[in-house]
Amino acid sequence: MGLATPSDISVRGFDDIEIAWVIDPELATMHVPHREMGRVAARCLIARSLIRTALHP
Image 1 (spheres, rainbow, N blue to C red):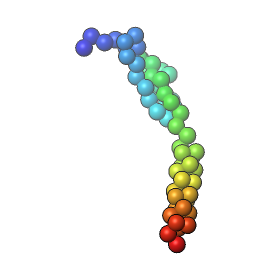
Image 2 (cartoon, rainbow, N blue to C red; image 1 turned 60 degrees about the horizontal axis):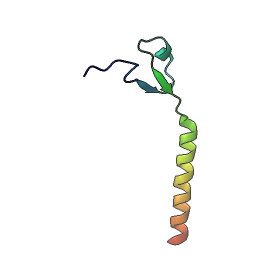
Image 3 (tube, rainbow, N blue to C red; image 1 turned 90 degrees about the vertical axis):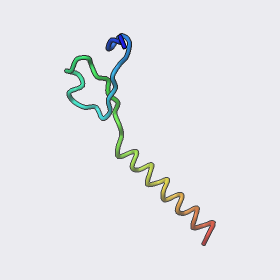
């Protein structure tokens, strides 16, 4: 394809892997807040359950 890294394309990763800063080409990573995502998901499920129970006792 004739693309070069990182001038034409870049590589992304998740979860702040430790090796990201030493590999070539450099890997940009994104922090994923697993606990917070779990909390939000649980709250959504509980809220949905409560709404369904209120609407269809």
